[in-house]
Image (cartoon, rainbow, N blue to C red; front, side, top):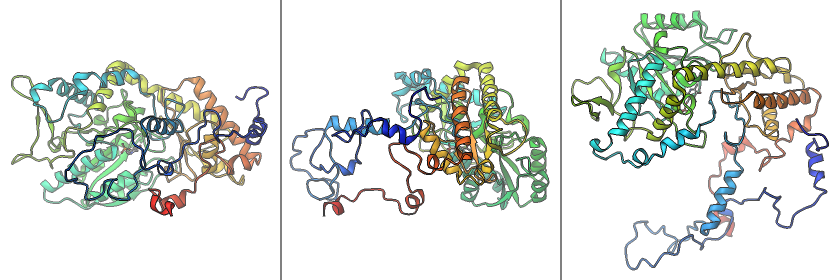
Length: 517
Ligand SMILES: *Cc1c(COP(=O)(O)O)cnc(C)c1O
């Protein structure tokens, strides 16, 4: 809530400075930072190199001395400041609440970072002899054990490097399993509410996608799904809890129907945060599922670090785990099976090396510090937080579906009808409130969707502040305060960008040569 006596409207805040313009153009800590290409100094450098003498460069004439490529230059402190200033204009989970639905932007406990920096684990090279990295292999083995236990699945491929990469791994395994029986089949069924990576994965693996409609509860329409099932279908890709934040209640019946026609059940496990420790996907009849370590098991993401998307497999697909695959030798030492041998079912490898070691360490640290009871509480608290938000906002915003939600709550733009404010404007006004906007216009099955995922790591105090802002914005929209929305954001480092032009006509590099003219 704004404190008494503080200016409240954007205009009032601007006037509050008494119209004072600074000589530098900066405003206190709001320091203007030009693009690196705009600083115009091409001869500055952070290091003074000795003349390299006579040698052939392998840059084909692209080095600065010989061509007018005009790479921008900064001194060492200028370089530091440039990137530090830019980083301070960025929003981050360490700065504030980040309710981006379907992304599980949860706090990454610093213990994870400490573990990922233990020198014996961080300073290893993927080509080191295996006898010298038994500790790293042990970490991978422990992590595999936790993932298999939590999902109730017998096999895991650790190497995929993101959720989408895990999907690719899973559907390649499904294809390989069908090919082994002589027919890869033709279709993958994907619900309308699916994340865009699902149909993209199916298409990349050579399948045609058939979309399954949602029913008016926001769940997969079981009858429509069954009507599509025949022996041309290779498998289905289903997210559970789904992208409307709802648990797919018919999941066991769906699995049985899919198996009855000899197809496989891929589960998009990006929302595992909502059920970890409470439901084992293996018990639901799922054949393979990726787990976003960077969502469910913390670890920084969204600009803060790489992803990691291990895939767990049921007995039906366990033979198709790609290399490298962790194996225990007779002397109890760990090794990696690196090559596909004659008679192997698997389709090869997904990555050059072994995957994201740093993510494995962070995820394992997160799991072990929570313990099995703690992980169960993660799911419970995530669901509680989302339902608290849903219940606190449902009288001023429009819920997309009835009933309790899982780890995220979904609103449509119906409450903005006739206000002139659209979901996009609402999101931009949230930036002025100091929040990263929720996920918007996704899932596609809900008009003007606003998908809010608080995660378990936000306190009630933080949620209450957010609720206060959201309620304020909803009332302001209904009261016709259009300026607040249409001009937003007022307080971001940049005002509203032309997103359509940026997508259609991207300018990826400032043309130094052009500007010099
Ligand atoms: C995040 C997400 C993905 C993709 O995961 P990445 O790690 O970003 O590749 C796929 N499906 C759903 C439902 C997701 O939320």
